[in-house]
Image (cartoon, rainbow, N blue to C red; front, side, top):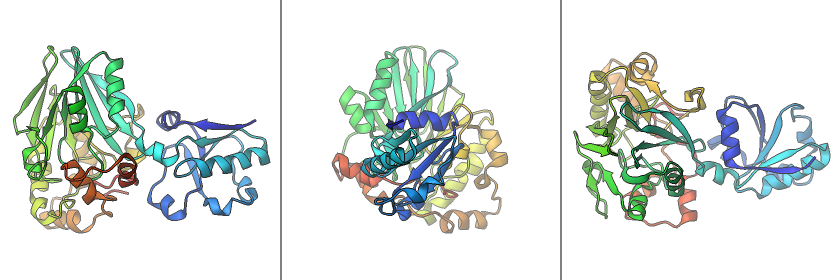
Length: 378
């Protein structure tokens, strides 16, 4: 029996496959309460590292007999130490999370959403540790990535596996909770970077304006993306209809909630736009469209196959944010009853405008913590 490493990728597969697991999180209580690993079949216990340095005896009786044990901390070192003490005390195999919560925050797991009608495939990249979702549309040797994260190597490696060239990078809006990888990946591979012009008033770089009604064709099989201006989370928020099957909603509509309008300090100005998009524009669309958001807030939003998606018509029956018929009540809900704002969101917006250029470690620190782009979030 021994100490063993578990990678973020291995943990992601366990979460998505709903395998039973016991997690001992040895970070400080405040960090744990702010942000932790969530999964359907995971039991989690938080005991700070400083309480276990001299003796792990207090935790031994709380360890389940028939579940794998994973110890996690911020960067790896503390969890490795505690896990080794548990191995020596129990004689069991015990795992530590390789790279800690930093690695968990940055890992992306690709999930196939479906085949496209005239050839091609659509993939969702699930960032379990942050609740971010991005997409790759693949067709006839080309690919478009929607709402790409800063971990651009993941998309490059996946495109290489699929033997396709990334030709388009698309951000549905100017993000406030994570740093976009769209501009940098476009520069690296020679692709076109698209951004809604109404969100780009302060950007310091060139881009292709993503306008209402814009069509972007991927590959010779003519998988076409239609842009649909859908303001409310930001003034420029733009949804994408792919192959007349899928509705990529950015941060306007989620499976369990709706987008918040306050991250640019203009909640009162944008709440009317948000209501119009959700209660008029989206209601005019085909209810059989499959909604694919840019974020999720809770593990309960995950489907059996690990994807985050739902039929648009079903969301009008189940999503609380789509069923506030009184306009005054809706306005109050989306301007007053909000979770805390994302960590470092102002600096992240500035980075996505090109006004700040934080280094890799600083980028990681800026993004640490849960997704908070929804009204009814954690």
